Length: 291
Image 1: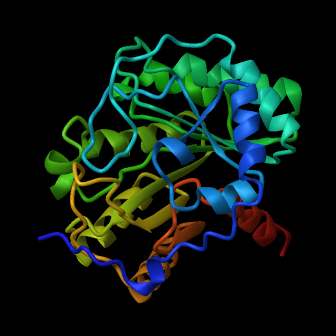
Image 2: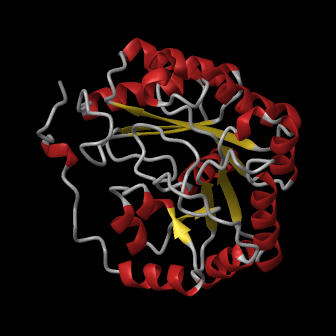
């Protein structure tokens, strides 16, 4: 049975939205989407107040129907050829130093949208070569050439989320394959080991602690550098129920274990999402290198 009452540590500070209008007006100006809104992220007000957002390309409609996700899955949109240039312009105008770009899954496109990702990276580089770029990609249906297109655009970070433990895939991610997701991360390193890789998981879906640790080990086995762990929050009654509200103490145990396993940076906490304070991971590596 789903747990209905949220604990104290899951209360959102609603006072952090002072730049909400600024970011929303910028998105409208350039006809852009953010995963912050589409996925109903609990951190969006805080991030908007810091003038940051995770841009979502290739439309608002997803070709898959994961039971945890709030992104809609209706009629798939035409690819907007102006989107890379518009996104780059918005990033520069907002004064961003680190840009995160994600996408809906587009299994209908021959390359899964890989070429569009590359165009976005190139457009940002032309506008400001000092901006660091993080791409949160789909599994591209395991297409190696499509993945190479993304890798060859040379973002600083390529993120692909495993989302949950393999035992729950059929129930929660029926159109995804755990081993395929691991292969994406492995292949990125094989193609270009200078690119940092990242993955993330939700907890509270009914997984066991030992299963989470096994996923961590699998991710390290494929060379994954960064890890994010956050609490699953049910977007609506139609979505998969929350089975557990994981305590902050458990999140801290996970963080310590991830550090022991060799992740270069781990964000672990109830409100952590894959792109939350994304630049912190690069800053942490830079600080270690300078120490």
